[in-house]
Length: 573
Image (cartoon, rainbow, N blue to C red; front, side, top):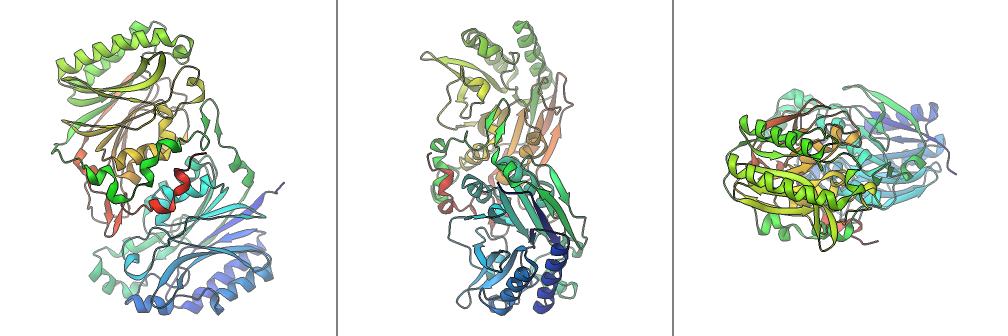
């Protein structure tokens, strides 16, 4: 059995003097070893600040994998008996440069290297992206995988190494985006059930004396080129064990037990990885040019409108619960809502469906008729999660109605443990073209799987209607915002008032790209209702904003994914 280990992660400023940068690494290796750390992680591009005159200059200041610069780090790791993970721009055949991570053991041996898969912005002008599937290294410390900055902003790389068994993901950052440390880092830990260790620079990403020339190429205020620091060690439930300060020069430590990452079970729900449905995820393997988003894009012009996410209370008298839910729908309509989403299995108390699914299906048929009539009467689009009976089987099904009647339905793909006694899973995700844009549907347990929203976004959804009940603390805290951000799509999430987690219904909106750079890479903003009561939250949403996925030049939320490198995501067990 492996013992607990102490992780150190660093944050500091990297300049343009390559030898001074090497000295900074060696000094911090010593400091981490003196503190008793088993492994120390360094930021992205430790060899040189990310300012280059041209590609040839980038190659000149890069390091050789078998050269003196890397060799000095290996020697210090051996001398201090400590594992070292660092990142440096690394030379290939001239003028090729790779953004490369190194993993060095206590003996100073190079255990392996991993190159960045997804380049961001001007990195595409100077560097070459990797063409190798993400690797996991089985070490004395645990099973270690890597993401590198933009690799972690998109969900696929972290998901792939988690599926391949990683317990710890090391994430080196060269970022001046505040939403990396606040959102992308902790959510990747939680959604994959792994420890995630990030190391981000602090201070200016390029020397201030060079800033004028940089600003001529990229309009940006001087204070916005500063990296925030905020390096952190996050546990498999998305809880921060240790975190560096804002723009400080420091090393952060935490002692962890990597075996905690082997427990993926969520009580009453299931297993975060074992409950994935690779046989339904085939779209994730398609080349970008074959995605529905490209082949059949959503093009209907839609003005912004008000959407409402309903939070309803249940009652032992089902009819009363039905009527109160419809009352809140009418109230939201009175306040101008045109799309209204009801929560997961809204008329039924927890456990009621499992005890008598046939009765629940009968109630659901009646509720469906009433909602259809209300949608027609009030000129609404309504989404509700109910029980469907078909061919002798029962499904947890989400319906979408327009004023003209039912548009379509979605049978839940991911079924939680407590519903498996009655619910037959669906076999596909669906979107529907409506007068309000292209709407994708998901429900409940679906939201804990990164693949669900990713597939809907790749199908061209302008908006995702999500009927749910918060059962995991990190989902409303991190995952809803992340699903909106990483896919650049609006999400309307309706929650039950009796949800075990004390959070409200949430609407996550995204702006139209491009947006001026103000320190967030892919903004998504939440509006939330008060928890635990019958109410609703409403917000003006802009479906057309979801159609442009270009976060910054040469960096797209969908088209920068590397489908060819993520075969494990669709491999059937």
